[in-house]
Image (cartoon, rainbow, N blue to C red; front, side, top):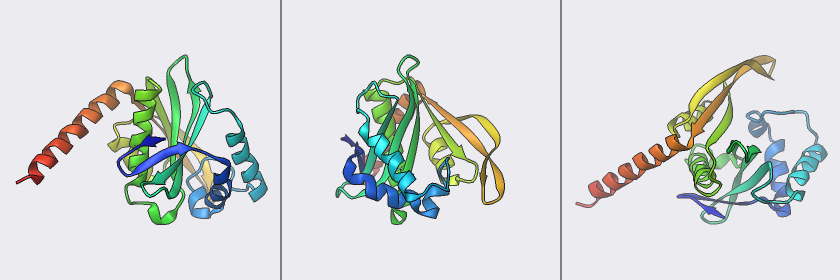
Length: 196
């Protein structure tokens, strides 16, 4: 388990399959996913089962975590994929499945918690994330989390009869370390201001 401020990340288990199917088959969740919106429930279940069946080690090319509140309520998924151990980089994706937990900083904390694990435990050099043009929440999270837009795949996603750009964001370990130092200072001064 990886502990954050508001959430914990734990390994994806077989017991999570039905929950993930429910999230992935909802239109408001799949709208932000990069993939086929036409997958049947059985196809979604097969994809999720393949994720779980593989061994979970630091030598895998992907890792999957359930986001849980501090009360152990599963609310989303974090995925590391395209892990390159030679080049020390990977892609990260954070998704809040439970609609009532969106826009409440759970996604931000899951992202920051994932970054802590990626850079401090896995000792990665760089994280990459793909963000749909219309996903303004994820763009804000990436930018506030220190990531830089490194490129645009123009008119790359087709949804609801229209093409959209796909942005590529990158964050280096040194940028992450600078960000965490600034966050610590903010917390320090906030705590100092709170004590009067």
